[in-house]
Amino acid sequence: MRLLACLTLVFLPLLASHAQDEPTATTTAEASVPPQELELRLVPFTPSQLEVEAKAWQELVQEKSREVADAKIEALRSGSTDQERIEALLKEEKQLMDRLGIVLDSWEAKGGEPDEIRSWLTAVRGAELQVDNPSGLVAAFRRWLEAEDGARSWVVKLAIFAAIFFAGAILASIFSRLAGKAMARHKSSSELLDRFVTTIIRRGILLLAIVIGLSTLGVKVGALVALIGGGAFILGFALQDSLANFANGIMLMIYQPFDVGDAVEIGGVSGSVDSVSLVNTTIKSWDNKVIIVPNKNVWGQTITNITGSDQRRVDMVFGIGYDDDIEKAQGILEKIVSEHELVLEDPAPTIKMHELADSSVNFVCRPWAKTSDYWGVYWDITRRVKDEFDANDISIPFPQRDVHLHQAG
Image 1: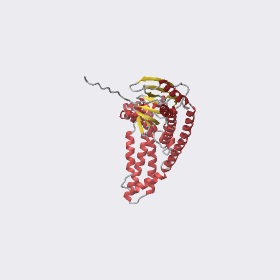
Image 2: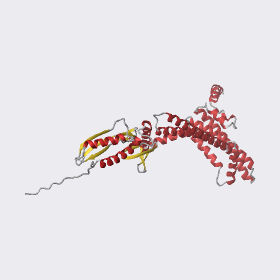
Image 3: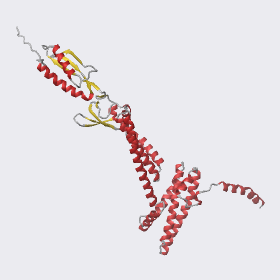
């Protein structure tokens, strides 16, 4: 007896101190704590503390679920259904389940592993909603409509989401217009870059509004972003060509080798630039065909911007016969060019006898004009040269060949 008493005196304080060291739950003291308040209380908790809180809330749910089961069993045995009492118990059970879910989400967000308790909670929820029990489904739906965190809560959340999205759309429109006006005042900015910047601003603000709106609906935005990031890494390998087009589209926006409306030649395709996106470039050919070229085939090819400069040289070649007067032809060409109102004086035009060809003596005629007047100058001068050469008996020879016949001796 003395030995037993001594052992008791030695180990009793140790057992008492160990019991005191065991962590206890603090958030379950008020089972009806509002969900938002519970979320705030859980912010400073560590994963180990949250595990304790989760198990304590699980015990409350388990106890309430047992009460619900007992009430249903009693109703089955007695043959009378106290539906109001059962619905009241189910409502209390649902509130406890919702708060347990909040604790599990916080625990998981901080690196915990609530899978076991979450699976148990899912099974208990499923047991309450059985498809072969229509009255139970109707009662559950009625409880959801009447619950503070049920239908009314979702209506408020959806209204807030719609308001945030609407406000985001208005702000996106305002800021994109302001950015467009600011870019328009910047003379070195191209129309392509203007469109790109305004589009990025508008879509960026809309995306931010959607993310904020989803957070009000209870969507875990951080987990969603992480999921998208992981999926993007995997899809990157399958969409290498699209990513290459995207990267080359960025280069086109930054370096601006051409603008909307410019006449270009790219990789054998010529026409007027209609639009440029981050994926492809749309070109309208001279006969109004729409040609869509992937951006990797644009940036990776030689780009000729026909209308990239304000002035262009009009290159023409005119041939006269070997028997015609060279000085007279030279004077006619100089007169035609000098009298044309669209030909620029500076740079000065070049009119020279260029080569002795097989069938003609060729003159180069190279006046300068504004890019927009290029074809007008080309067509006008070509017609006037024909008229003036004909009026002054200067021939415009066509290819010919002399054949000499020798009689065999």
